[in-house]
Image (cartoon, rainbow, N blue to C red; front, side):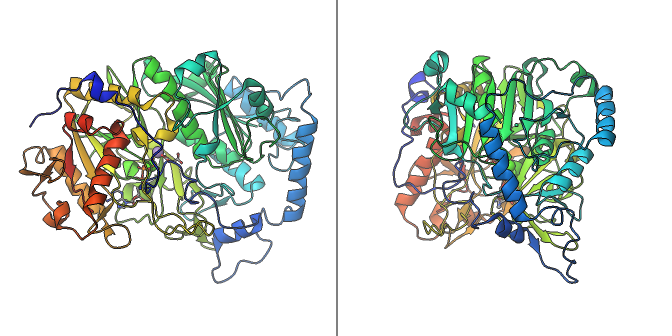
Length: 619
Ligand SMILES: Nc1ncnc2c1ncn2[C@@H]1O[C@H](COP(=O)(O)OP(=O)(O)OP(=O)(O)O)[C@@H](O)[C@H]1O
Ligand SMILES: O=C([O-])CC(=O)C(=O)O
Ligand SMILES: [Ca+2]
Ligand SMILES: [Mn+2]
């Protein structure tokens, strides 16, 4: 069985057209595309009422800390005052004083703060929270952040297993069409601009206007490879955001924190404040602005925490290729014998679910670097989709939802606080963010040797993410999407640059490529059903054991790709597209090109050159 072969420069760097019209979306990077990211309610009160389900006996009104503190009107009024105060004070001369450095001193300062003046109240101060602070809450612990969230952030509750349930507000997914990057003389030539690019330009002045807002500070690291570790500072106004990043980035030891020094990159997240529409380049009240020269990012108008995580991923997609390191939107795990597998796929295709495998060590679930030394996780935590999460099917993830974990936009029983994972009232995109060590067989440090198998996850045939049906657009079915490098929204350079590196690394290391459909079989969404997770796991087990490499294959009719005739524990009829229901040949063709395009710039040649196997690929 050949592993990889004759990849030429030409077929790797073929031109790409990401502007295809009329394509249906399968999995979706662009979480706002199908309204999946916007909650279908008109007011904050309606949003809050979705979060809790009534239970008997009904909890008496006023017994919750938050609901009795301020009325909705008062909160709205305060927020308006805050925004106008912040707009009026753009000329201020000094910023907040950061209490940082020696963690012991910090603790003392906080203790004093507790007695003499209340710790900062992020959402209810009269002025914009960034502007009149004298203290910044620096690298608080999860317990401290819980207290802050519960006291000051409406919609924060402790669930029956100890997780912190939060609401991200009107935006429950990323807003990729609001990601702006400052265009200067360097980025102008370096980055991918123009048609199809995720990078929308803005200038330095507009960036500085948006930067004028932000109380919690996290100093943390990205990338477990010690030689390529990046120091990041996250300045945010919500305890929920601080806890989220505490979980998602690599947590420094007290010694590392003491010697932290200057961060390599800083995020200012004031997501609860809209950006000013009169600022140049702003097309909506949401803006995620990246300034590579200043090494800063500003987030306004969205409180969806994934923006910070994926914002930093974009930064890594810029910094790492400069060091000849490939950054990948992939999960990663390692067998007992040291064999590493990458799970490369678009959002929602199963990276977190499948890399969390009780029989293997988890290296990471979403963002990795592949250098000359091997693989390393960029992050210190996992971000699992939890819609329909079940204890039987995903025990390790289920058990990770405990004290310290941030649970976003889930619905729970008002009294018992048991989460109903099937409830999509707030969004389909419910999420759990937990430190990687909450998975029992996590590999720490999160690094491994070169991958033996590169598994491309494709959610075939109309989708993994049925959109929350858009009332305006009337979208009822999942849509196919094209997304270069399985994550076009996060790449910074032209996709061919990443594709060329992947092809080269796979070839050099002799990694085998596999294509697995985690989507629909027996017909498209609506007429077939999604391939059972248990079958997908069997197929993956067969890859790891080596048995699939030695299996019998037959060539698929149209593209001549190899399909195994048998996989232990998997009904053979789901392996072959010929056996499945009617949806047309065109669709089959279409989805093949889609998936190939997703990875390697839409050229079938390259796909073949990588010798990918096609496992079950059904329409
Ligand atoms: N056959 C299958 N294989 C994988 N996942 C499946 C399958 N069937 C259903 N699912 C569900 O699909 C979802 C996959 O989500 P997951 O978090 O693993 O995606 P992801 O690739 O990590 O996406 P993201 O990058 O957005 O975090 C889970 O809710 C999982 O239970
Ligand atoms: O960033 C997010 O919103 C979640 C995620 O991992 C993805 O979409 O790929
Ligand atoms: Ca995930
Ligand atoms: Mn992801």
